[in-house]
Length: 149
Length: 164
Image (cartoon, rainbow over all chains, first blue to last red; front, top):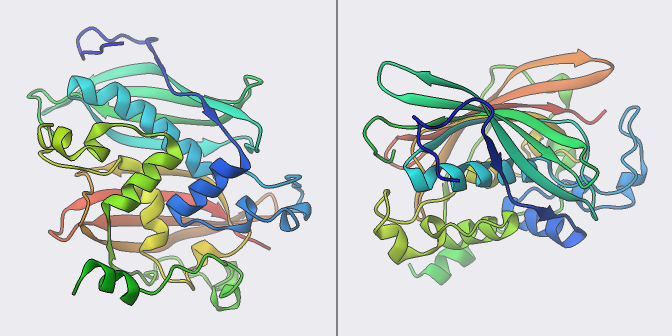
């Protein structure tokens, strides 16, 4: 979809990329992020309990969700000269090998400020059962004069 | 110094997070407001490319020098979310963010200028708050990454649930 600040409206949607989660994709994310927390690597460790929670096996990095949402936002914004300025996320459900996740966004509001224009977006990542695994909000700037920065 | 010599001079990243676990602060010892130890880190094209591969990024602004040069930033940049890598590359092995069992509960980040390959990136970071909720031990962390010109690349904060 081609977006411009003027033609965007509340309720417009943004579709993100589907991402197949595997032990290999999690290991690759370890190498790329340098986050080698055993939560993502060690099956024996993950047999234990975390307080009242038992994950039942290794889990994907929460920040992998973040990276996918960010990818969706930049793929949407950059071609029209807009800039991904903020992303806030919360993890609501662990993601495990075998899951397929997909981020999406829905435009919540537009705001004109003294020197720029902003689009506020509710974001969500769902798994293959349509369950939310991450939720959040994003801000994309549509500069009045197209400029990178 | 050649690139190869630089690589061999740099200490290898310790991927066994258990190794220095006893050196890391537990929740009780983390004092909100005290700066975390940080390390400057030279971001490479290779590190950016590996991060892109891990999240499926194919944007030529990150990966194709000729296309990036003709683009809005006049050269290659890193994806905004490269701070995911920078968080670990700019902190030492005894940083409490690496404690095994640290659970990320959510983060928020604001982006200013993009990071670029060959930037030397520094981090200012600290715990900002800590609290107990539903028998879980939380720490709020805040972080600002700068490039070698002193420009803010991005700033963010998050919550982690600390291992018991």
